Image (spheres, helix red, strand yellow):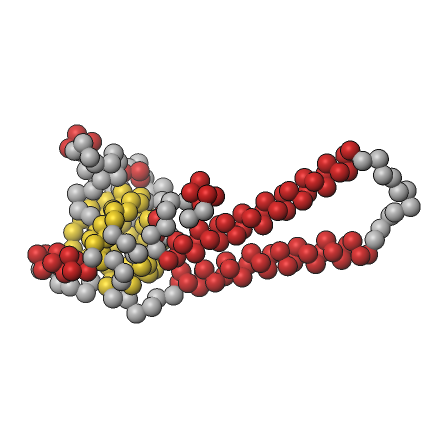
Amino acid sequence: MSTWSNLNLQNSNSPIMEQLSFFHDHALLILILITSFISYMFLMMFFNKFINRNLLHSQMIEMIWTILPIFILLFIAFPSLQILYMLDEINDPLLSIKSIGHQWYWSYEYSDFPKIEFDSYMIPINEMKSHYFRLLEVDNRLILPIKSQIRILISSSDVIHSWTIPSLGIKVDGSPGRLNQTNFYINRPGIFFGQCSEICGVNHSFMPIIIESIPMKMFLNWLNKKI
């Protein structure tokens, strides 16, 4: 990942997040070029002594500063629309997960398997071990296989929550009475952290999310133990 993305975004662990990082760099480069050009023009106007009292208007200049921004916006709009369609597209998911937000914890259901559902609470500070991350560790992690297309259905039982994993490029609101969905693909094993991104009440900052991605063989062993 580029230097600019490292300054602003987490390391990407999914193809969608990689595309979002590339688009971030693409848009930022265009903004830097525009800002540099305008700054140069300001400095030239302030420090030169060229004066033309007869220059009142120029159709050519007006055409240039009207048409050029259109092309610049198109260079930004086309990649943005492509990523938006990629975020909404569901491609034959191998596994479906249901996540329900509560005040203030998450509950998960593995819809493709019977009797696999659990709640995920943040571990209190007085019960944490030395290697845990403060305010991020949970008692039940969401276990998922790597290199698999996964669909997640998100809802809420009380107020609006937001299921967010920045390193996977996921941020989906969970609204009461509504079922939202998205899909993702995890590139490699690891532990990925997230938190509710909606202000859902007094304990809003105490409902973290942890995904633990493991190889498919280990995931099947975990399923056998749960079933």
